[in-house]
Image (cartoon, rainbow, N blue to C red; front, side, top):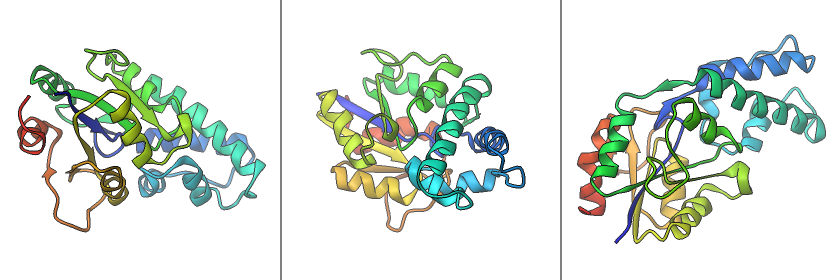
Length: 220
């Protein structure tokens, strides 16, 4: 059997909101909106949503269509470059826990609603091996790659990697909803950005995963 742990990004493995806000503000000002600013609170309020929804929420002072799409594209590109260099706030125990889960026989993956290149910026900044069988993170998928919703990408990644069992670890209600729709069990990262409207298994630290995953998926 091949058992996989599929991880959300923001609010689950790290908090990049401060640096994302800085990067987006640079591009907003360069685009001529010098009286506008993107704050950390703004970014945290939309974390986990598809990028087009984020742009529609934060860039209401732009005209919907080419103008907004261009600003969003500029922000996304610079965000990836900025995070590759500066990173974010990595939650305690991420590296050691990923290694422990791998040593226990589980396979680690990431699925996010982010733009293309965002997950890679995170992994490359922290020099986390990814993309191949046996790597600390074996595969990734995101909204920006294929414009699929999170439930579709969870299912796509699980099928692509021939997982016989899998669970998703996320922090907000839409993560739970997508996981249920995809047909997999969910673990709530309760230290993240959101709450869940029903009782679900949870962790209060990333370090807790090696304890709860065998309860959800069974031992390997």
